[in-house]
Length: 63
Image 1 (cartoon, rainbow, N blue to C red):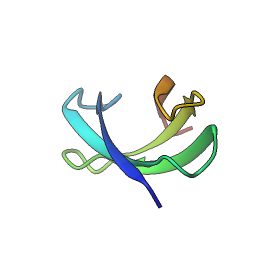
Image 2 (cartoon, one colour; image 1 turned 120 degrees about the vertical axis):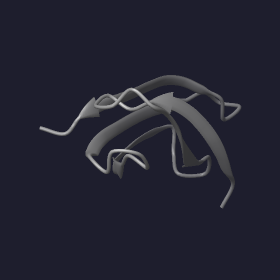
Image 3 (cartoon, helix red, strand yellow; image 1 turned 135 degrees about the vertical axis):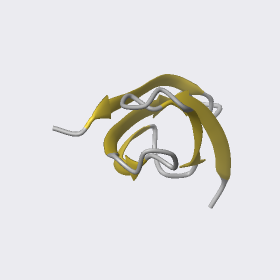
């Protein structure tokens, strides 16, 4: 498993936090992640290109 850190802002408290992305987990990934600061759950959706670079990243409030 190849992992890389990715920085983004929490959609609730807007703090800059990081997530470890599994670069071998497929081009399109989605998961539920809890903010390290405010502890609220969010939905993460991301897309990687052929080289494993993040090309789309969305962190939305969990519905």
